[in-house]
Image 1 (cartoon, rainbow, N blue to C red):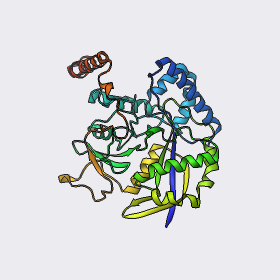
Image 2: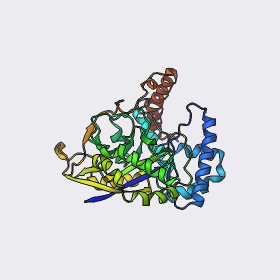
Image 3: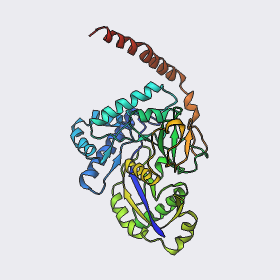
Image 4: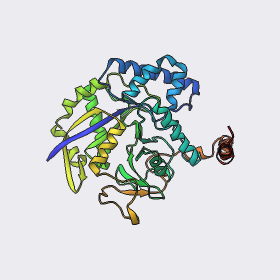
Length: 361
């Protein structure tokens, strides 16, 4: 029996604070981007969600320039229309200590809470590989999932899998398996026919690895502004996508099926809606069974083991380049950072803790 294929389209921006432009040059663009976002949310109730890259530092960078916009910004973060957190700043996991990653999440979640409910998604879309202990760190903050692009190789049969840390702690991974990763649906055409064509093209690319009847489209990329008019484009395109035309039958026969619980599901229509990463993660979880954060006693896997379990570091460059030279470029900066981390973690904080214990004010 044919069914409907669902698309959750997540509007977002990915923000490098300093890259091919200086920090202040990028901040000028950030201010314009968030100003535009607030204007869109003010006048378009159908533009329901936007994600600010999983890092709260963009809020601080913006509000240092536009402090008068804080309450206006909080109006939408508290309403859940702007998703913020959980990180303070997007990390490079192999260039900082484990404690630095922990504090990064701790500070990010604290700051995000000031703006409403933090987005509890282990969102690390553009890190150049991932440490094996990341599931442990995420679960330590009650985050039971991870969403990323780089580092996954051919060992992953599907775009959703379980990732186990060395101690057995697991998270559900949403691998952004398309070649463009977190940018796969950037700058969607707003003309209905062109929008439909783009949806069908993306569907054909990512459906073969899907485990559910819902796909993830990431509508954004590096330093991109929100797409004004996106809800209207979706509303106009959905009737055209509701029934796949005969010329699309070949594509559906080749790509349009997902094996779920032993059954082959066929799709003859598509529906697109604006949504969030938490909504997508919950959809994947509900259609693949509830997965525990750890294995059962004795190392046995749970009864509902629908998803593949992978372990170890995610450092493959097979499908997305890792830019490994970042490990050695500007070494003096990395040496200074390591020395500062060591001073704080091994000397300053332990001595401060002892002083407090002994009654120092």
